[in-house]
Length: 130
Image 1 (cartoon, one colour):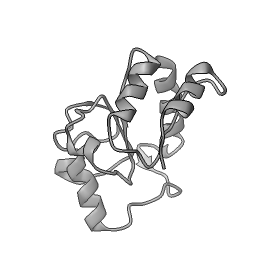
Image 2 (cartoon, helix red, strand yellow):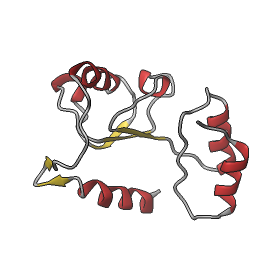
Image 3 (spheres, helix red, strand yellow):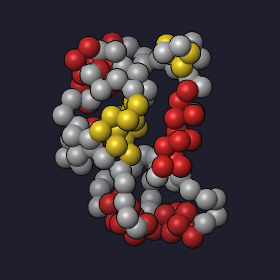
């Protein structure tokens, strides 16, 4: 996980300059969707490791990474369609697959790991998204 977070931090840094979002970063389409996304930031129960943990209060929505939000929170119950990335940790790949399959089919599923690895193949073979 530490290596993943290091790479994530480096990638996010490409979108910021002196603490401000670069112009090349996409914008939320309108105020309604910005409000909806900010509301998802309330009571998620996880740990904000990047972004603004107070977006639900001050409406300053930044690309945000949330570690282990509550699966019962609105953040984990609704489609996000915005710059919020919840990350769930797991001990085994089987635990991760079981979590994915216990919920509604996701629109997208991202695997971060070694290409063509046994774990990647398990995720591709044992889950469905789209």
